[in-house]
Length: 150
Image (cartoon, rainbow, N blue to C red; front, side, top):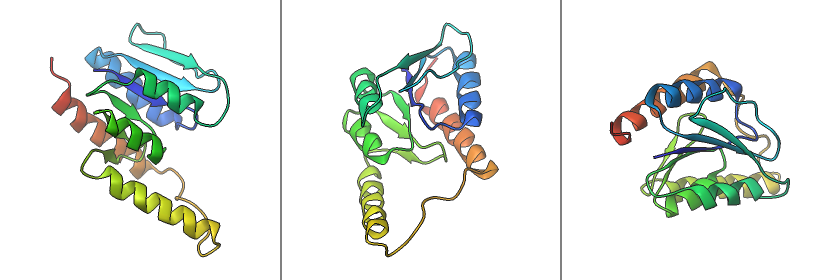
């Protein structure tokens, strides 16, 4: 199992949580972004820089992801593609996307985009909070306990 991270807009506190977890459990983590992402020096952690452009980082993550892997991303269309490959996706706010829930989340995301584009509603999600950080840490811990054997 490996963890792949859509790192372009990842909050630093989430990065720190991930670094501690992969060093403790000795599982590989790859940060993928359109610009260099600072990572801790560890044989378990690496960073890949891709060219800028729509979905370039997403496409690289999809090339690397395998069944049973975990992808950390706030991008629901990417999460949908990851789950279709038999992997899991975890939002930085602690939502775990699986085969059972990803289609509903994608439909809700698309509806909200339509409402925003039609000026029916304004704004996006609230700012990242301490509660979000805790929800992510808890969900990551549950996931790794369940799926990371040995």
